Picture 1 (cartoon, rainbow, N blue to C red):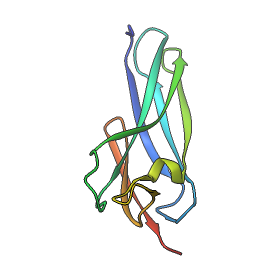
Picture 2: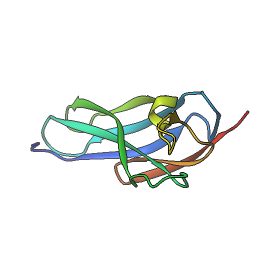
Picture 3: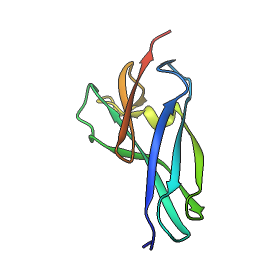
Length: 117
């Protein structure tokens, strides 16, 4: 519980397309918009838009807690790995499929593609 308010903005993906096996780098700005110092936990969710098996719409893949004074902001950086993009397929093996993924942080979303190259 916090006695202040926070705003996340400026979700940025390092690339909009990555190759199979590459990491995805992303960053987001967090600002304390309230009158008191406080802590905020920033959550990063991932959605595989068209997986070959049914998957959750939002899967928590990363999080970070930040403490900010009133009016201060900080840029948080995250790395999503191939492991974060993988799932157990019908043959019970862990796989990453090429295709479109959506990253969501706060009320923001951004799309990237994984390609077979």
